Length: 556
Image (cartoon, rainbow, N blue to C red; front, top):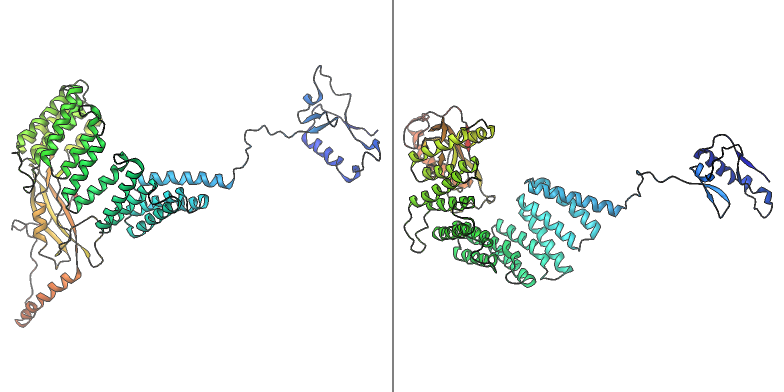
């Protein structure tokens, strides 16, 4: 019998065993064992190998294992390494990539990076359709997300097409009452409202609410988003009664099956008060805040820090008076608001769980209230107390907040001058129609120590032919109110502010004005072509003032 000996070391390398295996499988050894048994070539271990008590040969040679069926040793591949893994399928890779892209999309939306969100949403749609097909809920959701990004980019026409496509997909795979329709319907309604079609938007919101009712009942909390959007739409249309009715419905849903004296009712009451403020129902707003404060006092006591925020909001509400078109209202005194704000400050100052940040916040609220109500002397005293709180100790955080809150002026009352010249259109936040162009009016002014605007001067208007728009914008700017800048705790004036107001005009408005001035120009030519002398910038009050050389803040 032919014998093949393996000599040398007691360990056999993989390379040697592999060479032996190749030799045995070659043509030279391909004869059948039936022809000549002597050609069976077992591997015989040389007797010179060291003896080991109780140790089998296969234990000694890590790369070999004895096969009892064949009576011989065979090579074993070591696959125990941790680095090896079966490669994932293309479908698994696409699913992982889809999840990664969606997370990036969501982060982009959160950070208001809508251009990036748009790009990512398109890739999500492509992958979703590849994995799930077009007619699937996943693809419909992906297309809805793309519409959301496009809406935020103000690409309303394309967003509307994608919301409609998502709705069509869901209707094909489900039906016209599927709960999955709610989100794309809300997106479609918002886009319709942004494009100046409140009638279509109202119908889309109503359908979303109806679908919600069919699936989850008439009192489900899931419909609140649609109802709030409808209320916003009615407010923008001036339909206050319809908006009020919807908001009452929202409160009923949010307070359903809740004890009206329990703490669980607080979120619904806070939301109600905020909406009442939006609707200019200031008396109703104050009643809601008072009721909420009573509930908090019952559960937390009259010196709880939980009372600080509602007391501040109740106090500020006394700066507002409901329009005369509403029902008869009680007399409103700014002294009442002062009482609530002082109480908030007292609680913050005396409560052992309070801190300097809460105290400073209540002082600023009180000081701002005095400025807005026309009592700058009282405001100065309160601001001085706030300055002392932020200057106490050597904490760097206090000094940083002092610089931010008190060493720079802060707008307390904003103004919104008309955006359309020679037009009854109102600004809705969207781009103007194509027949309008953009102009600008620039003013310079100072902020006095009492927070009011001083030395208001007109610097420039573009196009220069538009002159009679200056006075309306100036009147609006005079209503600006600031928290004044403080130096060493005392309010002081701040100069060289610049306010740039952009507006929209039609080129035909300028053309008509130029044509109206042409006869006067012809008369001047007949008189000898007199030339005009540039006039210095005029103060709104009528005095001549030099244009500021530099500015330290632009208010837009």
